[in-house]
Image 1 (tube, helix red, strand yellow):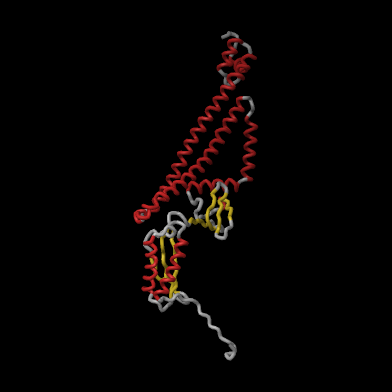
Image 2 (cartoon, rainbow, N blue to C red; image 1 turned 60 degrees about the vertical axis):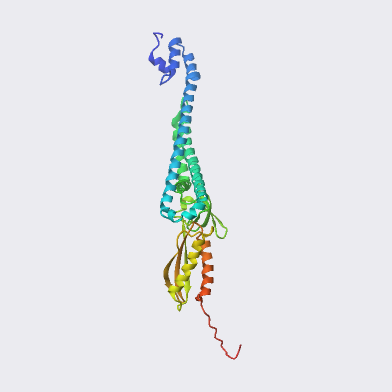
Length: 339
């Protein structure tokens, strides 16, 4: 080390903090230009490379952490759904013995899709933050002042935040819809004005096809409540009206017998999960007595099951001579002599 080299000269030449290579070169040669060249050609690239390597490692670690987090969230949600199913599993052993693999495959595919979507979203956000920070550090290493950039970014962020409030709300709501598995593709949902089958679930919008074939694009941020009619199980409710002269007990037995026969058949498109229930007299109407029947079905099968039961109940009531009342119209002619 040369005796006439001071610490202040080293700081002025190599900057603060002082790099090891620049210090050694300046102390050995006392040549400011050579020390600055060594700083730019050796120390600068090494620091930039170190920043990029650390960012790459952090990005990979974040991807693994996000993947595990998303898998845990999806698994917990699916476990909650299975727990809500409860004792129904024990009552459905015969059905599950033949359909368990397909049911498990559908649930596993849906859970995998949710995990992949959420993982991609969170990984992209984490990667953007990591590489943005790394880029700012690299710009600082090449001598660019970061203060104006940070101030400009802050102002731009505020402006974008005010202008894109609805977009941010839609995206955040979409993330929570996926995490909580409120609905998925092929589910039948009621989102307010939009009622139908879900065709796609995105970060910003949900696409729903209604019964008339119209395709609804619903912003996720505007969804305030969701009625999912195809998760875990469903229930077909039938109100059958019979005449006041009918023996209610006999009519209830006939209706229940028809429903039980369908339960025993276990049709693939009309799977009844448990023994049907006749709840009794629901209403004393203007022309008859309304008897209510409740049938628990597989998800999205309640409508076909209801239509099939109505047809069979109508045929059976006709066989038993039980009248289904209907309004009668009396026509009075002004002149009885005219026909």
